[in-house]
Image (cartoon, rainbow, N blue to C red; front, side, top):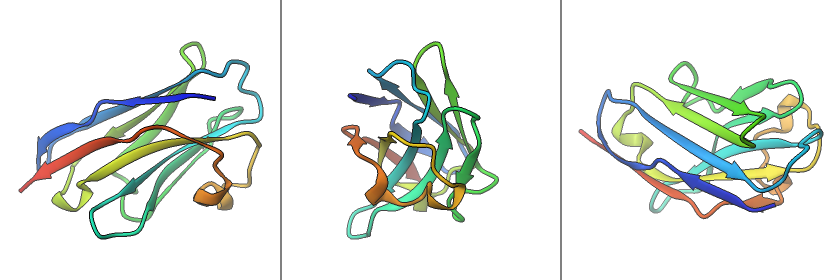
Length: 126
């Protein structure tokens, strides 16, 4: 599975940005995809994950209520809509995929994701 992330850029605090991640795999079935981020000098952080089959999602605490993850079956693409952005959201954002139907509680486990995109930089200015 190859993942191609796009949509990063520079935005002012309070603004919005949308990320996309196109996957080469079809017939997703038992698949889940997630977004993680890593800021300079910090550990990788779970942002959001979604189970492909039923589109049930889970979010990291720091983005709940501001970010929305969704998927488009026809385009094999997962999206991350980011609203009310804060300077602390500045990071490289990575999309990732795993080939299973995980429990919601495990969507945030980075080690369970087998495939990773190249990352896209999001910079939020104050």
